[in-house]
Length: 102
Image (cartoon, rainbow, N blue to C red; front, side, top):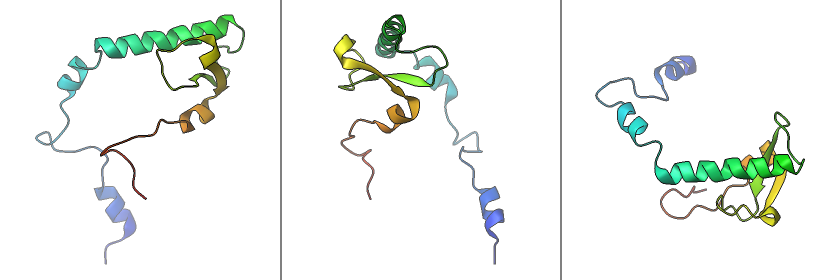
């Protein structure tokens, strides 16, 4: 009989073999696409807007939430400051093969 701790030691979240491992150079080279840079700039702009309005401060544990979940829509009516834990729970509905099944 194999113990549970022995099985857990054998399990690894990342592949150990170099032949079947991740291609880090490919990931690094394709990380900063123009679309990703644009979205990051828009999120930073939204944070600056609420900082100037006095709704968020550095280190206060709040995130800037886009009510319609569109990071490019930075209208003031679409932005609000909510706790980070609440914002992490608000995820858009996923369609297709990545949908979680119960």
